[in-house]
Length: 246
Image 1: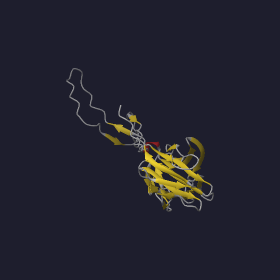
Image 2: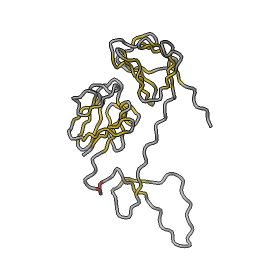
Image 3: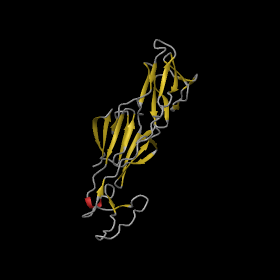
Image 4: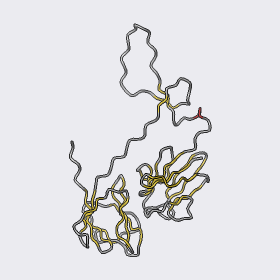
């Protein structure tokens, strides 16, 4: 049976068996898969199983749904896919195939060059990548494990400079996947994504300001020297200079 493994900052917390055709994912306790995180909407996404395939579909969540660092609306889950929910992650483990001889996803066959008789000249190697093809496991076939996809390029480092209040003059590096701002009756979060930094109002009746205008219900992407005002404190968003080449 396929499953989703919930982890927090790399520490496994719980395993959810995908034992229904439709399973809800969100912050509220009535969800089949509950993730207690401010970055997660009450009804965030749904996991659908159809004909042996498992899909993840976003339910118009506030901060969006990300798989392997990329935003998705509807996504076919595969082995080693990682769903990112702030500091929480859900790793997808598919149901193992019932017939090992039909495992097309995990084994590839590399065509070997023909044998050369002793003393015969060795033909020059052709340029270009080796030809590979997906096939069932077979006796004597060379097998290799498919490599993980290349890592997604990291977004440029950024920082918040505190302009007013008791912490004026201090700087807050935005190194985490999710940075919480404010407290009490006014809370916002800044999500660090592969395509930039996004601020969202998540709690409280008092609405934070971005460049003097109230934040709406949707995430807003931050730009260079944008000003945030929350809980009576003003902050300025800035990107750090790129690291110099070695």
